[in-house]
Amino acid sequence: MTLTSEPRPVSGRPARTGDASGTTTPVLEVHHLAKSYGEGPTASSVLADIDFTVRPGEFVSIVGPSGCGKTTLLKCLSGLLDPSSGSVVFEGEEIDGPPAKMTVVFQDYSRSLLPWMTVEQNIDLPLRRKFSKEERARFVAEALENVGLAGTGAKYPWQMSGGMQQRAAIARALAYQPDVLLMDEPFAAVDAQTRIDLEDLMLTVQEKYDTTVVFVTHDIDEAIYVASRVIVLSGTPTTVREVLDVDLPRPRDQIETKALPRFNELRAHLFRLIKEAKRA
Ligand SMILES: Nc1ncnc2c1ncn2[C@@H]1O[C@H](COP(=O)(O)OP(=O)(O)OP(=O)(O)O)[C@@H](O)[C@H]1O
Image 1 (cartoon, protein in one colour):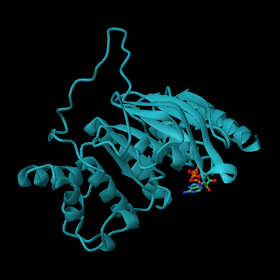
Image 2 (cartoon, protein in one colour):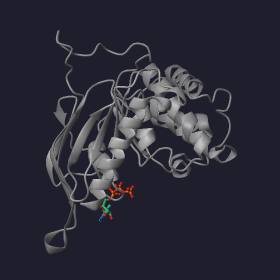
Image 3 (cartoon, protein in one colour):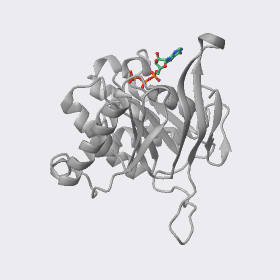
């Protein structure tokens, strides 16, 4: 994906639009989105009439039964895939390709970083067309520092653990300073302890970069822990089953937050919804 046209310091985001009632203009709007694969009688409908909005600064998780179309939805949001009908509106404009101020982090970190480049070069590569050398050096160093990889920029991806490689992929996404970061099962391929560390890392960097995050996951606990809202999808053809506000206090803590009765209520509710969706 391309980059923002203006370099922007992490701490210097433009003010968000809003009114006195506290409502905010959505950064992302999904209107009656449907997606089928194939044509004619063999076409299979995956997404049917999906509607939701995401406000600036939100951390929204998307969950649903296996195979319901979460990745398909994320690809439509990112402009990598055209919807069959309906639209995705990003910052007020309907998208017809990958928007400049959006980035995506995929599950498979081993294929997202170029093995013949150092980590620093990997992060720097997409910045080259837009930023000066000095700015790039600053953004790369800042991103590495923010994901806990300061001092490792000269390593090659294959010299790092899986968790470190995914941190580097996150650093590369953050160095763009995107307005919206889309993440597709980003921690599914790492071990449980690393996953927990990366969840906390995302909460920290999301606040620091003030980025809006849309996060697809299979893991219900993870979906609740990181999010301000959870969008629950139904079974195929998929619609939005429910949008759940995660009214848990911040900062989140892996032990304290998950021990809250409210966390368990939300968890049980989500499990029930997904079980029903699977049955349907
Ligand atoms: N390029 C494609 N061509 C045809 N069918 C596809 C294509 N990509 C995905 N599908 C089908 O669309 C459906 C949804 O797939 P998708 O990967 O979006 O679901 P998902 O919810 O992300 O899956 P999972 O839970 O396994 O990660 C599946 O039945 C899949 O086989």
